Image 1 (cartoon, one colour):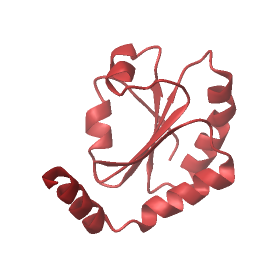
Image 2 (spheres, rainbow, N blue to C red; image 1 turned 135 degrees about the vertical axis):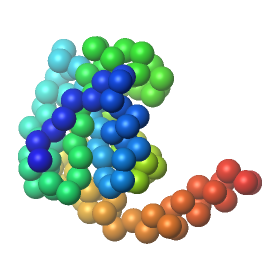
Image 3 (cartoon, rainbow, N blue to C red; image 1 turned 90 degrees about the horizontal axis):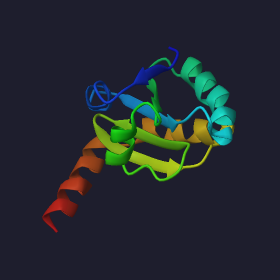
Image 4 (cartoon, rainbow, N blue to C red; image 1 turned 30 degrees about the vertical axis):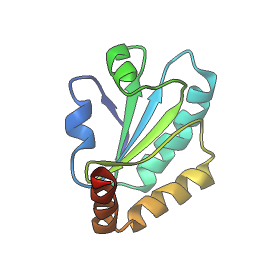
Length: 121
């Protein structure tokens, strides 16, 4: 599966879906964003079981502000509607592969239990 574009209208329904969703927040003028794009695209082809979404921060400034994106590229990873990873900076291919493997291996029942405990505490 290749990448999809998300907008202010489609972001929430995309990231709250079941499964793994990776979101690359980028802008056309950003050199590191352009350098990371082929890595992100290649990973999307290697992992058809995950959704790879691109968020153009220039075209969706309200959403970028709501997400508190301070620098780009910013990679966010959601699994079953839960944000499990967020970091600014372009990842090399091996690091992106490792991250995807770690997210696939997560015990989501445990993750949701930890979130519930944090909200209670």
